[in-house]
Amino acid sequence: QVQLVESGGGLVEAGGSLRLSCTASGSISNINDMGWYRQAPGKERELVAGITSAGSTNYADTVKGRFTISRDNAKNAVYLQMDSLRPEDTAVYYCNLDLTIPSRTFVRGITRRYWGQGTQVTVSS
Image 1: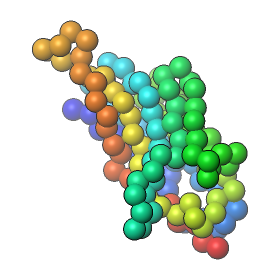
Image 2: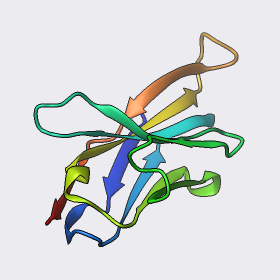
Image 3: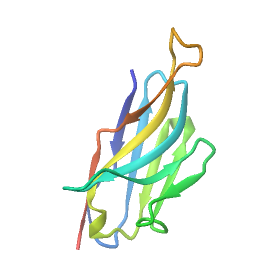
Image 4: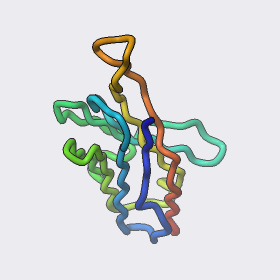
């Protein structure tokens, strides 16, 4: 069974920084793409940043130049460094990992996406 645990959220003043972490545990064969999403009250969940297994990254326009996504494959972890935070960054942040897990039925395993439990980020003005 796979479990994702997030940490690092909290309350910060505008202009401040936070670093989110997401670690996967369990029976995992491979971690493919990783990403961070966020959902503000009354809004749809949106992609904030993504990183491929090769290390290529992409960011939402609203966070480019302020947020940095990184990964540590040895730790099954993905991080989001958030700098120059703004009140509009306030949301629940979720990690999303594309994982391959072992399967007795399929030799190549089963690949599916997993979500973290979410961590609240609140930026005060």
